Image (tube, rainbow, N blue to C red):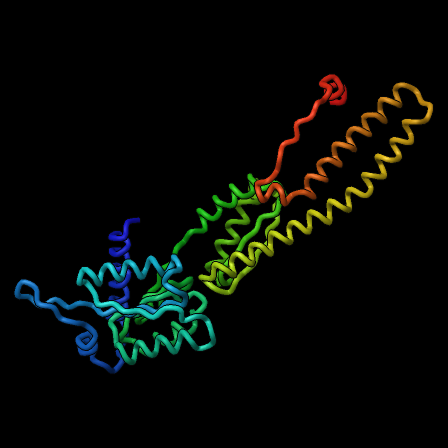
Length: 315
C-alpha cells in the first residue's frame, strides 16, 4: 500500500473515532466547545477550515514497523495541512506508564484524537478513554469498539500466517519450527496458532518452539531468542543422535563378528545387507551431529569412488 493510501486509511479511521465521540451520551460538557478548543483554524480561499489536532501514543519506538506506518501516515497528513500532529513513543509496558502518558496528552494537549497502539496496554487505554469522553481514542486493539469514544483497528493477518506455516511445514527437515513473538496477547496468539496450524496441515509431525521477548521492537532480544531456540534444537538433535549411534555401533560390531563365522551363502548375504544398511544409517546420524555445517552453509559434498553393482545389489 502506498503511503498516500495509508494516510487516507488513517484519516478514515480517525473520522470513525470522531463519529463515535459525537454519538456518545450526555457528558455534562458542551461538545462543540471542546471541539473548538481542540482544532486549529486555517484560512483558505476566504473560508475557515477546521484542522483536527492528533496526538499519538506509541508503546514502542516509531522505528518499529507497525507503529512506524501509522506515524508516517499521520506525518504525511500533517505535512499536507490536513491535521496537526505530535507524538510520544517508547512508552513501554511498565505498570501505569501508558495510562500516565494518555492522561498527560488529554490534559495538556487536549487533542481531538488520540491515536496509538493499545496492544499490551488494553485496560489502561480504555480506562483513560472513559474519563475523557469528548476526545476520540483510535487504537490498534484486539478488542471491539466501546461507546462513546473508543474505536479500534487491527491487522488481521492470521490467514497469511497460515499460508506461511504451510511453507514452513513443507520445508522443515527436523519437524521442529521456531517462532519468536513480541508479547503473548490475543492478537499475537492468533497469528502464532495460525502459523502452527498451517505447518501441521501439511506435516502432522511438526512441533513448535515458541519464545516471547516481551517487547514489540527489540531486535537484539529477538535474535537472542531465536539463537536460543536454535541452540535447543541443535542440542536435542545431538543428544538423540548420540543415543542412536551407541546401539548402532553395537549392531555393526556384532554383524562383523557374525560374518566371520561359517554360514550358508544366503545367510551371509543377509548379514552383509544388514551391515551395509547399518553403515548407511550411521552415516546419516553423523551428518545430523554435524548439523552446524548445514546451518552455516559450510557443508561440503564428498567425492568418492563406488561400485554401482554393489549399490544395485543392495537395493
